[in-house]
Image (cartoon, rainbow, N blue to C red; front, side):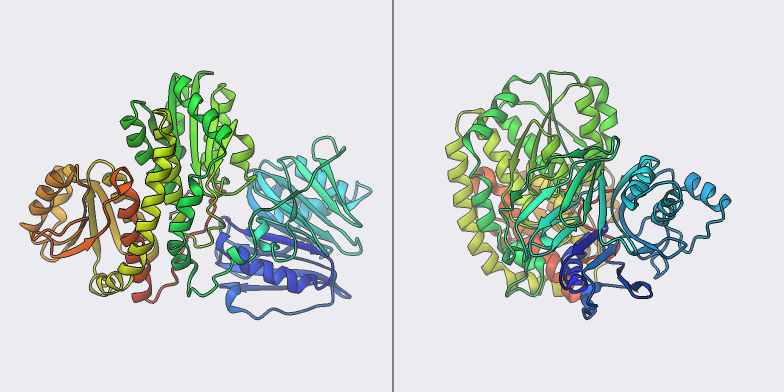
Amino acid sequence: MCGIIGIKGNNATEKAFFGLKILEYRGYDSWGVAYPSNNGFSVTKKVGHISNSEPFSSGSNIAIGHTRWATHGNVSEKNAHPHLSMDGKIALVHNGIVENFAEIKKSLIEKGFIFKSDTDSEVIVNLIQEKMKSENSFEEAVRKSLLEIEGSFAIVAVHLGDDKLVCARNGSPLVLGFGDSYFVASDATAFIGETKKVYFLNDNEMVVISLEPKVFDISSGKEISFETKELTWNFEQAQKGQYPHFMLKEISEQSKTLNLAVEQPKEKLDELTSLLKSSEKIFLIGCGTSYHACIAGSYFFSNAGLHVETVLASEFQRVENFLNEKTLIVALSQSGETADLLCAIKSAKKKGAKIASIVNVMDSSLMRISDVSLLMNAGPEICVLSTKSYTSQLAILLLLAYSIAGKANEAKQLVKETASKIELLISSSESEMESLAEKLADKKNIFIIGRGEAFPAALESALKIKEVSYIHAEGFAGAELKHGTIALIEEGTPAIVLCTPETRAEVLSNAIEMKSRGALIIGVDSKEHSEFDFNIIVPNCGNADIISLAIPIQLLAYYLALKKGLDPDKPRNLAKSVTVK
Ligand code: F6R
């Protein structure tokens, strides 16, 4: 949901350009860079992907940049950031949503301001210009403006003639980097090649980067002390390396990331296990793929004798009346910045509920708000689609479920065995999935069914296929088809049937029901069936079967995108880390 960057130091423009290319996964409909020059700000804005553009140098020691996922205003150069104030003296990039932008804009228009874009962000930069009349420094004008803004923001602003960057955060992520230059960005991968020494801003903090960064509380204006830390991720992890796309790289990494997922610090695992055992009510919440992992988790916990309810984070209000101090919320998120999830967590916290999280990004908002967190250790996931983070979530949920029964070591063994089987599966099924993709690329609909743990696997498979190939795909619990959707099956409709040994007999009956109506049946199982028109063989992984079921469909989705000439890393209309509600 928009990536922002600011640099103070040598070769600032080139560094901003480079960082934006890395941040592009956060939004890629348009981009822009601005730096102060002799005749005011020099601004470059373009519609499209920054990865298709050549970097340029400017000689400036200050630059800011933005890669956009449109919210207010269509995709156009005029709505791309950075935005300049009406007098041209302030440049600003913004990630977030200004909820009261209409009323601020109206009052600024009454004061004579003219707006060039349809964005909520231009309101901030003009409000700062207005405050400059009464405040005696740029940073005070920024701070006073932010006090009037309702909604979420991460901003970086520059004023001509002031050799400083002013940045602030409330609700949208922002991290400072300390290297040969100072960096500020939505995500540390934007500068990880330059420095690993970072400070993650908290909400309601503002930083003035002049000679050296100083952090202030936005409400009081008082300076606050802060401590830097060292990142554990490295530059190579955020690069495609030998792979043509991040999606294929991240699918291929799963044998490694599964092993890392179950290497949890004992004290954290014990703490969460005892919270799970002692809480009166437990909710597993997440969005998109993370929500599918939640459903699988509820099945794992149920096998361990523990009842948990799964709720879509965006629908969490429905259960708020049932929360109290004895409730535990387990929140799943790759990014730890998903707005729907953070909103649910904040209101659960107000009711006294305990918060646990399973999260990939260290020091993300979710991690910081949680009472206890388990890190996925999957490394940066750059492709917009969740792949390795999904299987890491599953591995950690299995570990927790086994841990409740005092069998954490058995779970580790199970996941490690699964990881080595997965390694073979990935290499052996690539070409098979590529040729299946060839057969399915021109289909309009694909249906996917599974029972038991293969049901959330079916939901997740459908999401993977539709978001990257734009083929309509729907996942169902096997028995549900005959309650309505079977009406859509006609001659040649592809239906993927996900089997596990426990659910095989029943789901095969559902497959035969579809086949009798003309469906082309693609079965995924550890053994062949004559009822299937196409057999995809996966290893038997026991209680971790849901992990092996995910792999061929991730690869199929990847190759479907390629067959249709689409970029699997950047599907249309999407962005990773959905920081708006
Ligand atoms: C699908 C996908 C999304 C995310 C969802 C939640 O491939 O990536 O559905 O799973 O936006 O994101 P996180 O896990 O970061 O909270």
